[in-house]
Image (cartoon, rainbow, N blue to C red):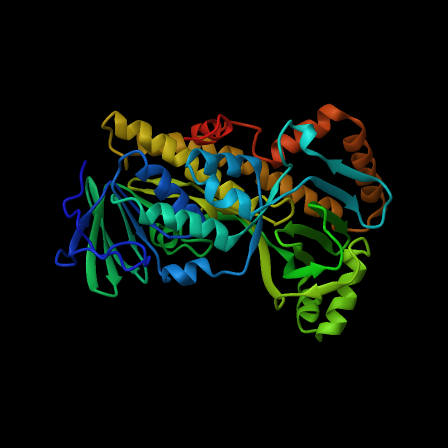
Length: 429
């Protein structure tokens, strides 16, 4: 199906030409609400297959890119970006993890994951939000069949049988976006999910995370750390330019107290968790705080609607799984929709969308359960649990097949791998 109004104003990237805004209706194959990393990954994947796409993003393109956040970027996420042809734009701007170390507080047993464990060039990667977004926005700007509507919000949605119509407020006025399928990629507080009446299960943890970026005195040697303390995990993610992002998890009241500390006091407390292996530490960004929760939607689909990323699920940041789950959602949905598009099937039908839900909802349950088990097992001082988890670390470090299995799970290579990721492993296009 082709767009009825192929010329449409996209108030987004400076590199993208401004199009004729005379038309007040835009017909596309898929409309995506939410222009973050997951939404743009989906748009790029679908656009490369010839579909017409609309991305509706509430922020400006610059604001969407400017978020001061870094992620543990998995091997499978990297493979998906390679499959999309984006690796040349990000590969040199992210940090390859040459080693990942897991430990239980100050317990001497350390589990090390190395690239040789999987035969890859890295265990994980440290990727900054702006680097990923800039690469994705560049791909969107180069695609004439992707309409990027920034500073735009959905005001109403109408079901019209084989179509769904979104009334969208843009800087140029109201626009009707018509599509057989809308995708909610609009985050944890997804308005599309709420309007659809889709429920969820889950809970808020008793913890919050404090995050900031540091510059250590000595090289971080591309080593990532995940240290488990009774109050919560403490992660060190290496970044390019010999910087590190820390994610310091603590009970809510303690996390708020940490956030309000004077800088000298904050750095002294942080140093006790960080260790002395990199020498003196310099804080580069103001600390920020975010609460953590586990959430899984009752369903990921209904007629004319699919949920991806944080709109569908969220998890504890331990193990760095959240964004990577969303990227795999995008790749899986793109694969399902591309196959249906090539067969001229109704993209918004339950029969098509159920293929996506069966694939991703079960796999996401596994990851959600894994991260929940980790945080509950390590965030306490009960002696029987302490003995059990330290025995587990010993087994993990001493039994190579178990270590290999755990690493495949954490890097997204356990389960059904999207075609985009397999393409990326073969060298992309």
